[in-house]
Image 1: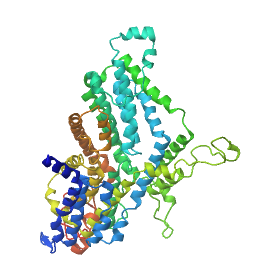
Image 2: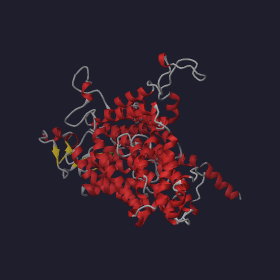
Image 3: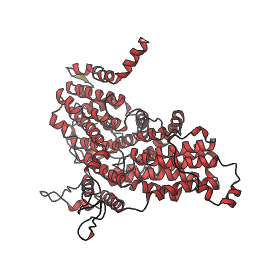
Image 4: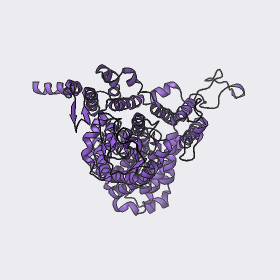
Length: 610
């Protein structure tokens, strides 16, 4: 008993143990005092780099083990980097509030407003009314609204909203299946649809899956995974759909700025040009795949009449419960459409956009508007516009609840505080701080030198291997944390082997969202797992093949239309020949083939080509 109590005590303080191990295990990096030079002194590892590496490893361990809240771990660079003499505290802190984080914050406010006025649920149920008459189209009906909503609101919120609808439909089908001994023809002739509509739609707190027949069991598993997969796939379609996308944009901007560029060229519109078609293709492939796995031979058969009525009845009840569309829902929908249009038409390639109307006062040329400009503008309107027609002037109607004129905005600050995921902002900032420190100290350049062993691989093979590795790792830890850690490494890997940095960075970022195997991988997986419809072995086996399908899809996308959108077949001259003037006089071309060999030197700025 004493032994068991001791083990229980250790388990109770396991987070303290993980924290101690995180700080102790990489301590050797703090004792590095001399330069370790390799490859004829062209790639050196010095004290500053080693201390920066120490911070990154400590945070990686804490993120993976979740010994501390992920957002709290993201704040550690603010004190670790200055205390170790790596960076000034002011330089570290400014990474936490920037253009990318404000873009995401505005999106979070819009998402909070959609949830508060219940617009997201109306969209979901409306789509299911159209598609949910057959079992296979019902699967699409569950996937499509989850997929669409997860582009704009958090994947967690989209999945949580769909779960009660999923349970209601499954419970309705289960109750009707218990009456299958009655001849459906007799039922229709005697009672019409009264018996179907008379079945109670109230959900039990715990659905006993074991009481369902085998067909319904498999359908329920498929329905659950439809919701989870729809949320995971939808997040990649827009820049604000999931935090790893913004990690990519923010860190790519940092690296490009190091080489003298004002930005990486990743905008809302060109990201959607790449990711939206890929997301649609992946959604259709996932839908077909889940039909094959869970409906088997029934995916092409007509749904039984009684089951079809059960589906329609459940969805119709959900729709009636919503009531008429409110004034607030209309306002939020209009603002949502305006924001989407502002994001898309800010700066169209070779055309321009509304952003060109706002230029720098000094130069009169450079556009000062960014995607974050539109995001925060619309977010502020949510705190100004009324939730309902203002009860003032000629519209004022005195009642027991309204004794004096007044109005309530669409979104109040109290609501925003409770619904917005503020921790994600800190998580993004922590990733940007690590990327900036690694770039400034030259650690990323050193890592790039060490990764030159991969330069003999074909680029599509390298891309495939990177995506497989990232997809495997993100199954056990936060996808945002993984993106924050690997972006500097992927950037230098691409530079060191002569590839366009965005080629590998975009692919690996999207692969961070391909976590279909385990409940702990993403919140949508955990939410549908909690419903009791599916078990871990079933989720793992189904998700394993889904991961492969997703990685093959992103490999196809990045090597076809992705390369055309971002010009990934050409190595940018700023990376390929940064210091060519000092070694060979000048650079006569702005594009280099992928066979170009890039030699790494002691800092990010000193790259020469041979």
